[in-house]
Length: 473
Image 1 (cartoon, rainbow, N blue to C red):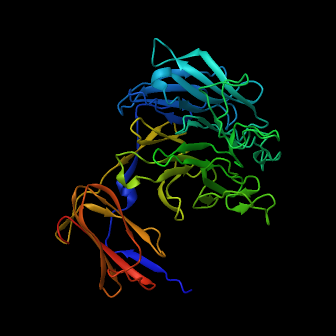
Image 2: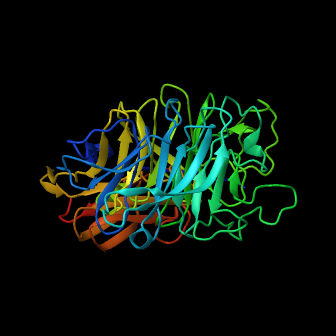
């Protein structure tokens, strides 16, 4: 059967995306030593908790003019942070933190080379201070090497605690731990920390994929085949678990982590065979949704971020924001689970970006090894005069493009206004009107199935679309 390919072009000039979204110092008066995680208690106090690798967590009000941060928890006496990938690496507040005042940390122990997952409780007399004496060790994992210690932890929509573990380190996963489900390394773990069982300070969720196995596999495991998922997060709308898995020698990858799936390491690195280098058996493996290479346009160590669901930056809505620690590049990734992912470079920041974080309102920040915290802010396009008419909208390129059979057109309105979208062929003939109605201010999407106004499928070719909003063009 003969297929058709349709290419659609914008019929309007629009401001560049990076002119609308800016990265600015969030707290200009504060500076930290190797900040690498930012979390919000989400208890109505609008505070920021900032994790530093040496073993101190600071807390301060989410106010740009803040001039000082309080020590929330200092466990430097317990943390080993001499090597680059060790230290106090992650923080997660309990979903009911406002009631139980529990928080959980992931750190490298000072003795016996092991990862510690521990619970602490805030002081009953000072909400800005954690009582060190309340430490409860949840889990200990031996670390054979000083690198690939993972470090992230987060609560999922199901209320369980998720932990990302590296493959144990060295290079190439020499002990093949990521593919060995009798080992906790190279995995995502899922624990019920609100219960205990069999002498442990947690219980196994009954639907974990390896529950009840008779082969000696660890029932804590949720997914496997990871190299070093340094940072991961849950999308607050879809519930998807997004993970950035740091690559070996050539490729960095972004994965959507699902229960019981194998993400391929050390068999594969990204979309390519690693061990063996060719002809590897990909049966049962789940491949990334995106990868980038160790080259001039990429970097060498991916830092995972978040799908933006805040309210301040409409053009960023639904995009996964991530970066590369080595190159300082920041990208926006679009992926809906059906169409191929698309990626756009936002900025060459020049920063050593260690992590991303959200405040209580869902607005997006990043931490960098220059000691600063940065915030993504929205500067809407200025209303301009063009051909004597005001332009008060932003029209994006359709996706996918080329397409067959359908595509989506995304646009932003600065205010509620009547909007029309029309499609034309290369001769200037109007093919159909996709929209002709009043839209509210914000981001909108309109789908086109590649047919004309009579419902007839159009032939392969080049087409244009035009948006009219407010005053007539």
